[in-house]
Amino acid sequence: MVTADILNTHSLKTLRSEISKTNIKGYSKMKKAEVVELMLKNKDRFMHIQKKGKKEKSEPEKEQKSEPEKKPKLKLKQKSEPEKKPKLKLKQKSEPEKKQKLKLNGELVMIGKRGFVVKGDKVFHKKSGKAVSAEVKANVMKYLSDPVFKKKIDAKNK
Image 1 (spheres, rainbow, N blue to C red):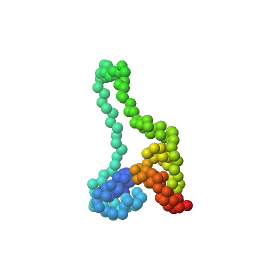
Image 2: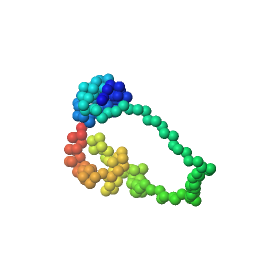
Image 3: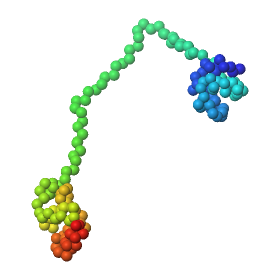
């Protein structure tokens, strides 16, 4: 027979798990007293619950031995030298790009707010020093060679 005393010996978590097994809804926000009351209304579903007793600590039976067992000690092997792994080298930029980035000698062309450096048949961005795309290169070269195109671009940017 289930009583309030038996149910109160269990934790709220245990009581809620027992309720969930019986498909009763609406218990999750209830306090322990309300959960116990709900369970007592449905006694027939909780007949299997018994009083929870404190677990008695059983002392292990000691065998009489003259000497305690000694566990073999594990010896750690020392490595003579740790294996050296080859360090990964980061790819460095090729030498011509570094020189171009440091020294931008050539004709400075300003098209609108964008600046380009023209050195021979190569075109670079003024700020980054990186080479431009083929399309931009073609436009810059056309700007330099064609006075009509140059006037159109200059008029557009003003």
